[in-house]
Length: 75
Image (tube, rainbow, N blue to C red):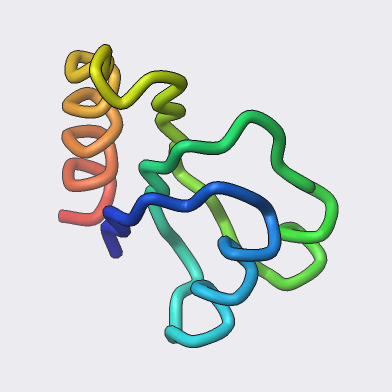
């Protein structure tokens, strides 16, 4: 599952993931710190998190690599 949302903090991410049936995900988000233990405790495998620190300077190469890797691993 690919998630493309502007997520600003851990709580927004947890709320989003709780609202969908996802066990694997790529999260492309504007987040600086994540509570990895909480995510792991809830059984979610994050394949990649691409952090956008500045919406005007998006690292598209990293985002593309994350998406490509996810797709290739799920074929």
